[in-house]
Every structure is written in structure tokens, then in C-alpha cells.
Image (cartoon, rainbow over all chains, first blue to last red; front, top):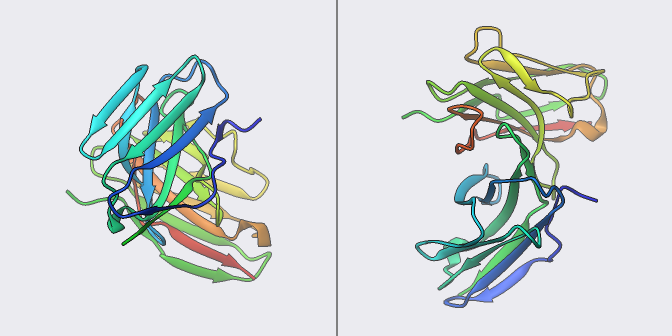
Length: 110
Length: 114
């Protein structure tokens, strides 16, 4: 079983719509979770971190965490063409060692 | 504030050759990470340093990969000898410490092994 799984294929959304990304993790003791955005040919940049069950909102981004189900999600509201990128889910394995999923590509269609 | 610096940005080598990558973290960041990102996959942590000590190198293929951070600032990652499957982007990242703080990534070095 992979430490972090992101199984959805490329996601195409119309401009202004909501993009929804999901991630599951295997280690129940994980305490902190992150979403990174990676533009093609660029390095990852942190967009959201979440540590407690529930929702965390930051601008157009909302992260959701359910530790009982070992599930993290990211919602992007009012999607813009500039949101077109690969979104990486990451889990802290302790001592800030991150395990990443393979990523989900999002394409926002104008 | 200057970001994480890496060099070279691109490298092409033949299999069985050696290669070295350099990273200079953000000033004041005690923790430094090397990741390998193969095309279509997420980054995989190879090694983590806290100052000049190794915190975790469990995923570093030690028969061919080595890394050092002698003075607790910049770091080098070496591959000797390289294999075709080492073709990837090598990302360096740094953070203030080992608590749950943001990791800042450098631009990466794209390695192609022919």
C-alpha cells in the first residue's frame, strides 16, 4: 500500500467552476498534511497545510481533513486558468519528512 | 530573501559516469532535504539533514548515491555510477527545522542519463 495515494486522472474544469482533488494516506499516526502546487517545469510550492479534522479555508482554496477515514481533499473555488498545474498531496511522516502522492493534473478551460 | 539555489540546472551524462549536484539553502534554515522526482511522479525524499547531521537517509540508494553537508550550510549530492533509471529532477529543499514548518524548494536539477 502506498503511503499517499492520489488516483484521479487529469481533471478538466471550466473557468469559474470548483475543482475537487482527493488524497488518502496509509499511516494513521500522521499529524500534518500539505497541498503543493507544481507548474510544469517548476518546483513545488506550498499552498495549504492542515493539521486538524475539518475544513481550512485560504482564499479560493479549502483543505478538508478526515483522520478517521485517512482522507485529505482540496477544493479550488472559482477556478482560474492560472490554477492549471499539478497538485501534490503530502503527508508528514515525522521530523518534517514528507511523503508525496503522484499528483493530480488540473486543467482550467477558459 | 534569496531562495534555495541549485546548480547545475541541467545535466546530461552517459550511464556509468559520475555527477554531482550542489544546493545552497535559505539563510538560517537548519534542515535541508534532497528529493528525486521522476517524470509523472511526486518527489521522493532521498536524504534529510539537520545542520550537518543526517536525520533520515533510508531511501537513499547508498551503493551509488552519497550526500554531504559538511559545514551545515550548503550540500552536495553525488551519483556514482549513474544508471538510466536515475534520470529525474533532483530537488533540494530547506526549512527552519524538523518541526512541521514549510519546506521551500529550489528550482531543481534535471538529470538525463543516456
